[in-house]
Every structure is written in structure tokens, then in C-alpha cells.
Image 1 (spheres, one colour):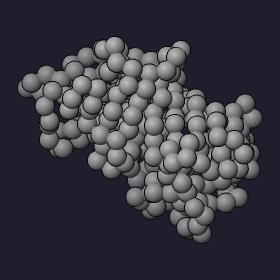
Image 2 (cartoon, rainbow, N blue to C red):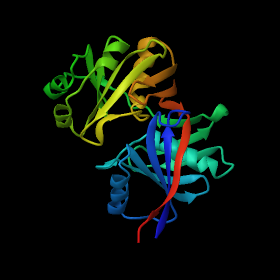
Image 3 (cartoon, one colour):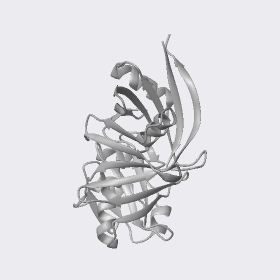
Length: 262
């Protein structure tokens, strides 16, 4: 058996920037074990498996090299980018196991918009492992369904932040996002996920379902430009609506090939 595979750089319009994702379109379901083996072999932030259910309607599942992920933005963007390139559709619906259906739309100037559920974070007392895992103490700590939010006063602190993955791994199943107001963007962030994928994720679309509500309230605006300040970097155009978060990005195809399974 052979499966097509695409590798896409998401949240960027340049190769070797943004976050890399593999996309594997399926014509029939394959086992969880095989999906995990493929994702581990790919060794990318995520591999998205998309199975067509009807016209413009797909099931999507995401796997990091170590586990299945409940919610992934950049691999959804990558999957939509691949599927849009193969049809004249302008809107897709992805059914997920954990966060409901996600509607993805083709926008002008090669941008793709994803409609996410709002997943706000609330203030909490910082766990000892979080403070031990961050080289700079945050000004405040919040927690969402996905991650702890370490809030900093300025962008430079986020960029200079060092982490101790062994400590942050103790926070499982939660990840950690460090964030602050930006200089050239409304806000910046970095994302650390040693319990679920790797030390640092280059660009994390899903966490903006929590970052956008927070910064919209702090900055008094519902339309925001965000930058994930990893070594690869990525730009996200965001909008807060009543109960949804719209996250838009660009993508660039890096590779198209085949997986040989026999």
C-alpha cells in the first residue's frame, strides 16, 4: 500500500519558516497504531491525517511524534492548503474528535482562515514545576484546557526566556505558552510542549484560541496580529467574535511524495 504525503510550512509564505506539518490524505481509515508510526517516522511537529467524508467535508486527526493531539492549528492550515490546491472549493469542514467541527475558508492574497472555538484561560496559582521550568518568573499565570499561560511584561522577556524541559514535563497533560505585548505585533508568544511533542513548537495555531481572548481584553481590540517568536517564527492574523476565534495564516509547500507501507 502507498499513501500520498505532503510537507507544508504553515503560518508563513517562506520555505523553512513557520511550523512544518505533514499531511496524509486517506481514502480509507487506517489504524491508530499506523498513524502514530507514520507521525513518529516523520518526526515533525504534527502529521495530519485527513479522510474525506463528503464533498468539502473531512475527518482530521493530528499526531505528534509521541502522541495523538486533541487540537492542532498549524497542521489544519497545512491540510486545508493541500486540499484547496486540489479543487476549486473555497470552504472546507473538518470534523475532529475533541473540539467539534472546524470550518476553514480560503481568503484573498493566499491567506487561509480557520474558525476555532474560544478556549479562554483563567488565573491560577503557578505550580512549582512551572516556575522551576522558566528562567524568568512570569508576572501572572493562567490556565486553559490546553496549557499554562505565563504572562510577561514585554517581548524581550519572552525572547530571552530559557526553559527546563524536565520540569515542564511534570505539568502533563498541559503545555506552556509564554506571551507578552509585542512591539511590531499586538502580542508575541512561544510554546513549550515537552510532555506532548518536543521542547518548543515553532508556531502553534491552537493556543491562539486562548491567547486571542486574553489579549483582546487586555488591549481593547478584537482584531490582532500575532507573532510566535520561535527560531523559525510565524505570523497569525486573529479576530475575536462572540464565541469563536478566527485565526488566519499562509502556507508554503515543501515536499510531495509517497509513503510505502509494503
